[in-house]
Length: 299
Length: 291
Image (cartoon, rainbow over all chains, first blue to last red; front, side):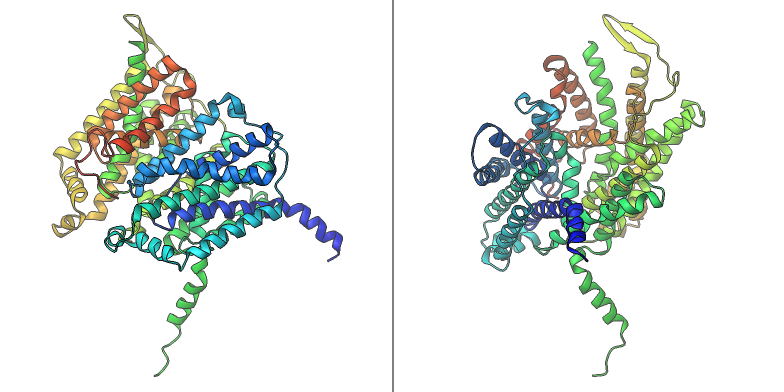
């Protein structure tokens, strides 16, 4: 392949590459709270807080982009603390509902806030994000999660995920761990929000609707929410999928929008029913399946 | 007075929708997030029956509700039954129902398109009554009446019939019910039928009331429904009905006093406060059920 063709290919797909990174970061933010058995559906709200904070800072101050990103990461984490204190007492579906509620309140707040142009949002945000920044952020987040796994904290989180009551009996301060994971997840989401806003030139409340959270959840669950790199696999797979479908859709006579939704839903359903540990567990499953079929060797 | 009527009318639709939610939650301790897709598809079913096939509304209504109920049984079979017995079935059931909702929504979008559709003119009576200084449309009264009648029928079914006793037995303790010879899977399927029939009826009434049927109509109501069941107490039927009317009134008064932009914030503000301050809701069971 000539250099020119390669360059063309890159120009066509660079935004896909960028979105794989961004979605990966978002999937990790869902994973972070899931890692101690908490389903938080407020990630789009944290993302919105990060996105709006960064846009406002870029428009109204001359701060360098690195500082803007840092503040945009910090603001949602700070919001997550007072949110987490009462909310993390709730479990399972209650937590999910409470965080859905919080997400909607944040979205409605931005819809009604004249300072950021209400429902239309802010446009013409200067493009500051480059692809290497996205992947640097992703690598940093992966590094954090990789360090947590296998550490004392990692074992504590796993214990809480498996059985919170038992974990507390062992002297694990469950509430503190759950709160810190919520805060960490909020930080990832805020960072992703800020990066996205400075990549797509705009920030608007409609970006942060409930369906956005569903997307993130799909990435994390499809990829596999038991291993820290699972969400990344899911984000990559499901961000590429629409690209393939866009080519395929017209040929089988289906509109791309519904087809994308349908495939997203179907993939999620199949994975949750048949591969509860996600796509990353697929090689193991295939191996196990073939092992079963092979006649047992004589001892 | 006008506001009270409007509030009751909106509330009756919320209450019907939330009753469906809470019925399944009471039986299975699982939140069925595909409920809103049934709500939407039922409204479309009625629309097709009335608009394209020229069926009279009085016949289309029960047919669409029946379709909703059957769809609910499909939801159970596909999204919930395979997961039963898995240790994390709460969270995974939540996720699989989100998945199914997405699939149903995609089907809706593919078949009906993203535009807002309307019932043909004259499907429903459009006469108005004057009550003091309030103007009430006949349609509003009919909707409130239908909602109340369905609630009464549900109460009767649960309290007085064999099926109702079985549903309550399974809700109380599935294992014990199974030992006593109750067909648990059948009862759960029946609860899904009832729940989705209610949700579908709510969708149909919503579509008629605002003469507005679109593929994203479920989303907004879904979140309102969650607020209602939390406010009423998870799994509590009277609580859901009461909270549905309460939320309807609250919303209408917010619009009247503060303007329409904060209408949705009220529901979620309430939801949030209830979860934090009184997680068992208005009429929930004394101990917080930890799911």
